Image 1 (cartoon, rainbow, N blue to C red):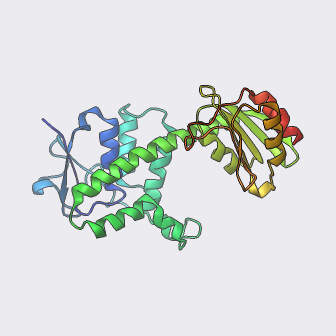
Image 2 (image 1 turned 180 degrees about the horizontal axis):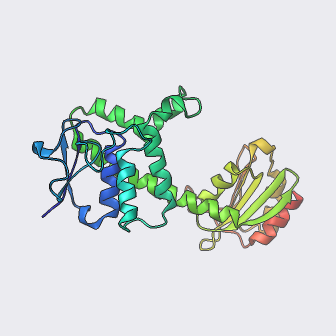
Image 3 (image 1 turned 120 degrees about the vertical axis):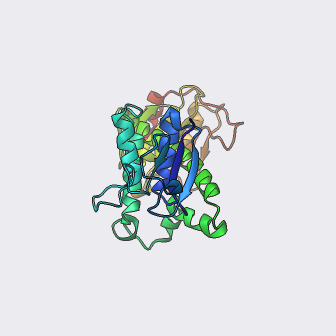
Length: 278
């Protein structure tokens, strides 16, 4: 029999992530129907967890509802822990970190514990965008679930790249510049640039092993100026396309925004030497 996942009407950033987790990681729920009940209620008023093909999340006071406790937990976290226990999720740091955010949001940490909670930047977060969707499309619960599930797929991809990037930065080639420590990495994962900057490095260089492009980012906090590095790169490989951003902290030899750019023949070792002397 086909599965049905039930959450409450006007679903929130607990019920929908719980739905997403089941559909994403449990093969029996991939094509599950989504249904809605009054908050705290159950599907057609049936006893919660009485039918193995009807699973309630964030409502009904069953195994995937947390409203019967004041513990720091949420419905999505209960679903996640069950999927881990059953072996459907294994060693996935990206998912573990996402679930942590689901729980924090469900306990209103974004209102009183996250930094600068009144900042407008938080209105761009998915859980607040959902509020806007609900105002624009009232009582269209199916649409809100569909959109949020697609958005969570995108967030998951970003988190996978982020987790991988942090590990790649840790194992990257470290070097010294006049602005501070730099790190160089052979990888197709562009997320290493942000990961290195957030990790406190003054300069990060990435060479795409497949396309051959080189991208260098410097930190504004370290007063990096890549002008001289840009000039040396042009001298050493004039046939390649080089671009220095007006900020002087972005040196690019390749970009998805400009597919006509020609990759450089310079390898990372040569670029490190340039950055050490620039």
